[in-house]
Image (tube, rainbow, N blue to C red; front, top):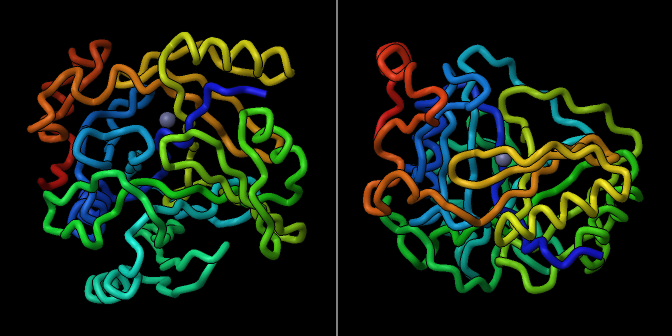
Length: 309
Ligand code: ZN
């Protein structure tokens, strides 16, 4: 069993409209945009990152807004819902706030004794805000007070037709079974970064998901550094997983592999971080391009639609 994985690092999803996406995560949810760059494999498309002040691993929601993307179809074989932690007692304040912004899909429930506010993102993305104790410092620079501000990720839900192989994989990755409520089994990694839970939701009869705007593309797990990442890569290869070589994503190093249930997993390093090419005080303001795409800057700056502050 691996000991290197410390919870979620980031969650990456697909969107349709960059400006709308930016407004939702900064104005409505109050996260900080910590990087404005492009999809390294498709540089005409933005890659937007939202998180806490520094973009600490475990807080970072990222998006590829493809302007003409069709909306995804929810189903099995994907991450169905991404959850953020909010302070205890703040759910009603969030319900009011999200209602004010005409956010859809609003409801409230309880899972494993924790109060959750459920809602949709701009493209129907499934989200939850979960009341829990969490001592991470929130970003309050967008006008949402510390009394209710999002702390970072709480968990991600894998929606599967059969959860057995993924449960085995999570336990190999260092997660421990926490409990079962209905068709949901929670796994928690001990000693993690606070974004410690993965919920496996089994729905045997459900249709397969079709990826599109509003779908999670992959979830990334955090490891401290490149040495720990190579250990994880070696162990996954030894277990029979097809794992990519290490890929330099400028702000972290990444490896990817597909889980038995069809969800794409990444293992990402906590180094070097989002302040490697701009000051923490100005994160996310300028368009940052990886060196291999720097020669495209003039064209990209004139053709990519502005997204707002
Ligand atoms: Zn990623």
